[in-house]
Image (cartoon, rainbow, N blue to C red; front, side, top):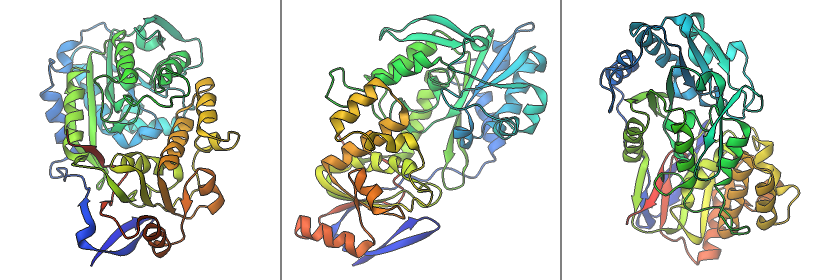
Length: 429
């Protein structure tokens, strides 16, 4: 009998679990952490993928914009990328006065000057103008339509810049396959109509059939949502990309990819897949998962990442045991909204097709997973909130295993996911 420790908030929960019943512990491979972040960035900029160095791509007299994320993506560590990127543009002949940094807010809220300073760092904030993209205003340029019929409306300053540099962080993403890359443009600096049409591709073409299974994390080829983003970004044709891959234990940069906005990004996706993707030979009847403790289990909205990842390792009709503190409750009104006014998943899907938000899609999908499996949740949430979303609240490990034994007759072989929010299981082909 082995003891398994699962992180929960600032502490942990332990459980006795038969060693022979552990199918596999699903953990990411270690990321490098020896070199300084500045050196990692410098090495990538000096050796770009399928591109000349940035300073060789620009010319005197041109105007440039650098696209960064917003405060929801501050973990990508833009503040370390900005000084060397500004220096490269300067070296190529573009002075600071002809450079603007645009925060790719998508349809998120505007940010304060203080947040801009945190996002891009004090040095860059003091050197160049920093502005937010506004998806619902008229400062947009219509560039054309994608093959999916998405009207591509792009921030005017991006559309009219002579040179566009995109930045971001690469992680698994449930719509785009992976974050980073083209997402800096669509949805990052796209108009509201563009964003909504693109995200609607997450649904199956036929009403009532739920989500499109091809729109998922770890998939670009054949993913219509991702392909539509790529087509939208191609109207801008960014000149250079710099994307980071973060070590989630140290919260520092482990890798940087730079260069061609398609192939350099793909190289980064391959690195993420290598370290965070885990192959399993078959799905299990039981998956036991922790988000990885605070802040990854700060609320139910963040817990969705673990629910999403864990369900790939779970046989349909199985049991998922989640350990997630959720000290700040649900964390998103949109995430909970599908369960307030709609009786079932069909009604929720119809409402989402009428009025889409990413948060509501995440909540809806969590509900779908819970309707197909027994999802047991140990948390600080009120039991009625958990039940409203179709999950089963349990007070402690002993109660969870009582349920598991009653349902399965005994404890079935299980996958254990100590950091479920950052590990992505996939079936071996």
